[in-house]
Image 1: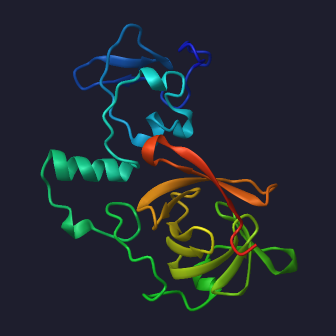
Image 2 (image 1 turned 90 degrees about the vertical axis):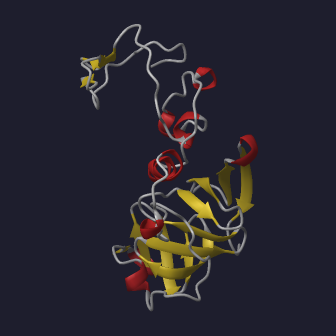
Length: 220
């Protein structure tokens, strides 16, 4: 869809979609003409143009934010809208409730193989995770990341990765969320713009209307 809202390429992910009452909303990869719908969507897809959804008319779409991620949107709806009980589902991995302590004083991996369990070995003792990038871990728990610089690895690793960054403090991520990271000092998610060609790092902070901030690589 172009900047004027005209479909330039037929959809391939959702070809046909019909509501339970029989109303067709997508037919042969095209939105049905003249249809008015209420759409529930999460914050970064609408206001912050994540994945480029709705970027063609972001300012024109009236929306009610349900949460930053799909999981938090669902959690907030269950808790606030339906007055449900989520206490049994509170966890530290960001999927329902993010209340982890930003510290390596709790349970943590004893070696790099446990922390980066699926990493592959590269030349010169470098390692790589396709979603996270290239890093050097011979001084674990200190890790040198090709884009972030020196990071202290805290926590268990794997699906729950805490890092202490000498520029911005503790942050959390995993394969599901990166390059979105949870920055403990802000108590909020921020977006990291991958860029291996710069000595600086660029982060998008969503608070207060959103803004880009630049930081040096950690420890460099």
